Length: 290
Image (cartoon, rainbow, N blue to C red; front, side, top):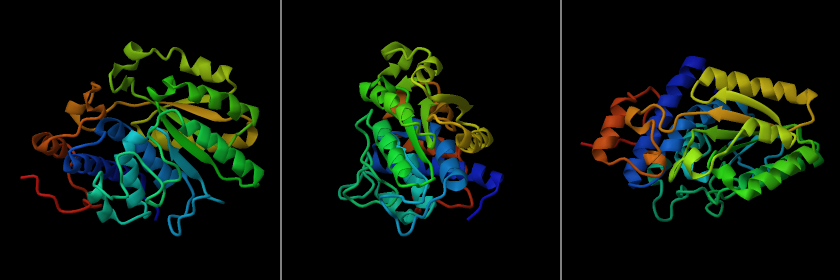
């Protein structure tokens, strides 16, 4: 299904409604980063990537594939996976329930379509993405590998081991993205562990570096489309420094790290949803918060 630009903007609002309702329902989860990365996930699954939700294939041969390395922002991914046809929309109501396929951090043993690797142990996703991109290279598969990482996550050492490997193998069809919201669970990244000049760091490792505002959907789409086109003439992996606002779309969740891993209560959920009016896409189930 092809959506217009305006429909995608409305879909972003619906995904944000899903995030609030899922985390409120579970009384658990990570709404802040999920809200901040909504435009990226909507852009990838509804405009950028080529893939087949059915039948889902773990190898992703002939498809663009995506890895969520910062797995704690699973609510936004689950919402987008469901709304792109990977599994029934009604299953979002099982988020973080016992025996649900929609665990707090994505896992693979439940067989949830769209999920190719367990994530949430931060720092591992870039290594997985490098391996997948290398496999596509060896198999003559011309499709792309995308991965998303948190800025707090790149304080992990394994990230920088993978950062060395990708340029060595000239993985030009690997496009990784860092969510630069400047916040992590314990506070601002500059206070916890300053990241320094990330553009200079990634360029020094041999990556092509781009930047974009991750909360502006047209910019996200245009940037990713351009980078895919330019990959033909480049023998480097690409790192996108994506500036976002944690909690974007809900005013009281913005400007603070508080909502990194705290679910809204009833009153907070009502307040958030009042800023995210219902859309024609519809909620995943009727839910009376009153």
